[in-house]
Structure formats: C-alpha cells, structure tokens
Image 1: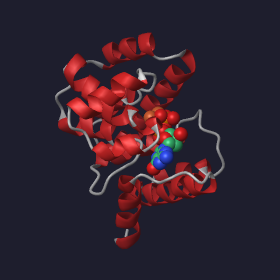
Image 2: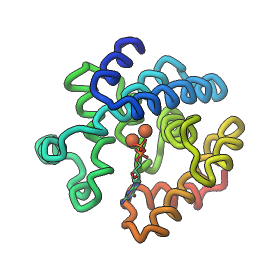
Image 3: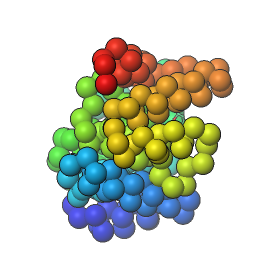
Length: 187
Ligand code: DGI
Ligand code: FE
Ligand code: FE
C-alpha cells in the first residue's frame, strides 16, 4: 500500500483531531527513520495506520480479539489498549498489509514488547513525541530520540508507567516486561 492510500483510508475513519495526530506521527516517524537508518516508507505507512482502530466499535474489537486468538489478557485491561492489536488485524485483513515489521509496529505501539525492532521503537516514540503532544516530560524524549532510540524508549516507558501509576491504573504485562528489559540491559 502507498502512503497516500493509507492516509485516505484513515482520513475517512478518524475524527479530524486524531487524523492530525496521525499526520504528526507520520512526519516524526519519517524523520526518525532517516536519522536512524530505517526504511522511511515503512515507517510512514506504519505511522499512517497505527491508530486506525482507535474508534472501532468496542464489541467488534472484543470479537476480533477472541476470534483471532489475540492475547486474551487484553480483555482484562482497559479497552484503550485494544486498538493497537486490532489495528494490526484490520491493516492485514482489510488492507492487505503483509509486512510483519509494519504489522508489529502497529500491534505494539501502545504497550511496547520485549525485543522490539527498530521500526517498532520508531513508531512507539513517534506516537509519544509528535508535535501535537504537549504533556510534561515529552521534551525529555524529544531531545533524546534524535540521538538514541533505546535511551528514548527507556525514558518514555518509565514516564508512561509513572503516569499510569499516578492515575492508579493497572499496567499491562507487556508494558512492564518492556520496561524491565530496558532497565536490565546496558544501553
Ligand atoms: O492512541 P494514542 O492516544 O495516540 O496513544 P497510545 O496508543 O499510546 O494510547 C495511549 C492510551 O493507552 C493512554 O490513554 C494510556 C493507555 N495505556 C497505555 N499503556 C497502558 C495504558 N492503559 C493501561 N491501563 N495500562 C497500560 O499498560
Ligand atoms: Fe494508539
Ligand atoms: Fe497514536
């Protein structure tokens, strides 16, 4: 699929604010890909589609999680987490995206996972730092992302988990496992 085609698809299904966020993620992902020797076309396509299921019907998402045998643990957590793995299913099944790295970048953009590829890290970070993000701490990750993706992941994961804890929210196991991986290896 071409980037322009992906943009048309999400422009139709996302509210304007979310579409503008998506454009910010595309732009940021292309820049990070160029800086860190990743394929910028793949980064742009993954970014364009990353939130495609963000407003998908909750019941339909539940059915997709069950019927495609996705991690059943998802259903014990907030439905906000479902749009990432469900988005990967829709990208593959409805739009013919076959590149496993692109699908994984969509699938794990919210929680991360241990052993993330460079593309997965780029989408995770681009989602976190795109120009529309203004929360406190975003600058820490913006400043670092151009130099060192792993360092940026470390900061983003730590801040995300602290944010969830400050809201007394449960933390999904993949998010904790990713955090642990980054804090255990010397990066
Ligand atoms: O879809 P976006 O808003 O662009 O960003 P995202 O895909 O990173 O989703 C962020 C939302 O997901 C935010 O509301 C916090 C929530 N979230 C992320 N990780 C976890 C989580 N919520 C819970 N309960 N547990 C998590 O581990
Ligand atoms: Fe998302
Ligand atoms: Fe997003």
